[in-house]
Amino acid sequence: MQLLKTILRQHTLAFIAIILLNLLSAGLGIAIISWINHGLLAEQSLALGISKMLGLLLLLLATTLGAQWCLTTLGHQFIWRKRSAMVWQMMNTPIATLEAKGEGELLALLGPDIRNITLAFVRLPELIQGIVLALVAMGYLGYLSVPVLLITIGWLVVTFTLGYKMVSKVYQHIDKVRGYESDLQSSFQVVIQGRKELALNPARAKHFYDTHYQAAAMGYKQNIIKADSYHLSAINWSNIMMLGLIGVIFLLAESQGWISMAVATSFSLTILFMRTPLLQAIGAYPTLLSGELAYKKINELLPEKSLPKEGKTQKVKDTWQQLRWDNITWQYPDKGFEVGPLSMTVTRGETVFIIGTNGSGKSTLSLLLTGLYPMAQGHAYCDGQAINAKSLMSLFSVVFTKPYLFETVFLEPSEADHALAAEWLMRLQLNNKITVDNHQLSTLSLSAGQSKRVALLLAMAEKRDILFLDEWAAEQDPQFRRYFYRELLPWLKQLGKTLLIISHDDDYFDVADRVYEMQQGHLRLLSAEESRQAARAVISQS
Ligand SMILES: Nc1ncnc2c1ncn2[C@@H]1O[C@H](COP(=O)(O)OP(=O)(O)OP(=O)(O)O)[C@@H](O)[C@H]1O
Image (tube, rainbow, N blue to C red; front, side, top):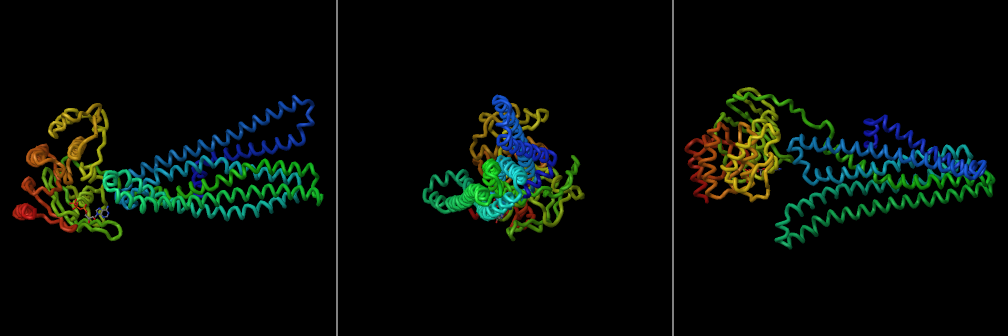
């Protein structure tokens, strides 16, 4: 099992110590049975016998608890590391790769999959103890009688072969359950993110509930019931066969005379002693299978060492003058929408507008130009020197069409520029609504237009050279939109910012030094006359 192998590789010594503790605990258990059977009544006094027994039982309790505690601690340590590595890896995985996997699948990784690995560790002590105890008990049974041990082994082989067949069915169904788990996560997202639309349209809500949600929920339920049924059948089958084994041993003693009744009693006591842990081990096995499946899924979707080598961020000179993208391309997976090949040049301090119809590829272009999407072909250059995606990213602050708002404005106290924050809150006409206290925004309960203004504040707080705004003014009222184009942008330009603005606001195309137009993934620089015509064309279309 991949999961067990990994833990074994990463924590070899701890694992050996745990196995030894388990062996000690199992050996002690068997020794106590043997001593109760043969030694207890031979003790000099009842008091001595009882105190010896209490001492031995306490020792057994301590070693068993010790073994379980070590394994559980090791397991949770492993999970903590794995989860932290996963979150870090997700934050460092190219966004195109994450988008291709889908949000439902990613949520399933961080939620149910990690939970299943945790449960596997919670039940792992039972599995290991069951196996170790069974092996030690076998040794003791061999010491009592080899022929009866062979019969016992034969009986157990038949029992567990059939049991294994049932457990493999458990695995098949757990595999299907994992698929439905992702679908469920996607459905939960719809319930949360689409709550307003669903509340307003009961027919749509019912359709979603009956088809999408129930398909996932029913699939999950049917398969988990089948998995549990096979699992319980395996436990019951093994339980009954263990009891049958005791009957066979007494038969061998009574009718065949292979062993004395005293030895048969010891045999039965030992089998009864190992029965519960062995059944618990069988009970724990499916949990381990779920953990194994989850671990495989995690490694399949977020393989370790999968992060592409982007190279180090090359420090771009503070005095850079020109950025150029040369014949770059990008295509969404499965032969999706293609951008490019296209070339573009931006000179420091320029205001560049990118216009184009809906779906022409402007937002996709913003992700490509900033280095967030990898260039399938072509390169980016800064003052003639090729630069990689990381360096490109370090130049940009972007406000996306649906920005995510962080509460923290400045990350470090030393970076805190409260004067800048106060000035921006005033310029964005938010000074009566929000304050920045202790680097944090006082509230994020904002309207759509206010959220965009806060996103701009956060972008400015990054103090990067280029500001890329994707349809920023779309949610602003006409008065503020005018103020944004006529006053804020020129003021930003004065501050030395290079501005890349995706815009549909034809009234203000004249603010730009240059206007590019996207048309079905291709970019074209418009002449001054074409820019004016583009503005007029949009006005005449509306
Ligand atoms: N994550 C994605 N996976 C696959 N295709 C996508 C993805 N995002 C966008 N597209 C496709 O890329 C094309 C361009 O989308 P994009 O959002 O870049 O257009 P846009 O010019 O910004 O449009 P708008 O003006 O409506 O914002 C669209 O046809 C869209 O279907």
